Image (tube, rainbow, N blue to C red; front, top):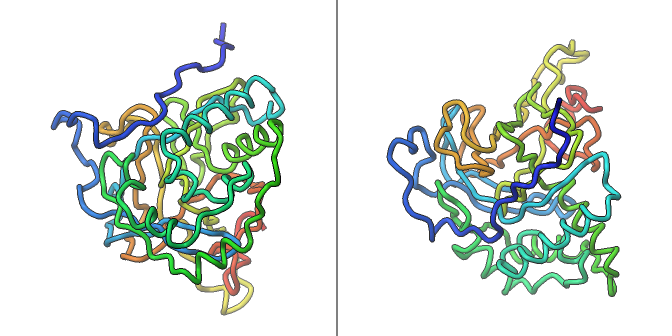
Length: 303
């Protein structure tokens, strides 16, 4: 008989990779290099932040390996479950208690939904350019921020701060944060590749938020089979450039349980935004990715 019990193996909140012992050498095969890997940058006032390559990466190279900052039980089809929502809010509050500056600065819209006003540029810039944003990285190094004051203020101006949110409002905000930013941490989870989306869970499962990994934005996979209708459409868009995996599997035996590892799907140049395909027909937002923009927009698979 199939096991119908929900997963309960939640990883510790507040993992700090800098405090962990070194992994055995045999586990480091193919691991990301201990070099600058990613920067946080500005995408648009509507999208907010994104993650950008801090150096060139070759196809199939592992970019970074990161521990979760937050983990909670989640069930897409049972989103109004009060017990789950309470657990999700508790997980968020625990993460804020341990890593307030980092979480609030990296996800100001989430903080605003809990009634927290986004920080001034000077304070946010100090956090974004500091090393603690990369404190959960196990392999690969955080290389700071390229966000300017003008970009930050444009983004900040669009953020609406909740006025005295109720406990119910905060539970909804935490649930929605997991819905849009969390990764399915069931065993051998991977994604970002066509056909690699995980089946919808029938029971609550572990969902993890990654301080950097969850900032990687969506990019639609082009419809390769589509016949171009004009010369403008002959140029097929590049599509997403990354994929992810959760936990040790395949060539990535070095990845720790419930940790995320990001891999290049093709050659990536320094300064290029890292993207992957969320694997959803209903994204829950208006997509502004390169595949969706003219003249290549007819290639978008979700249009």
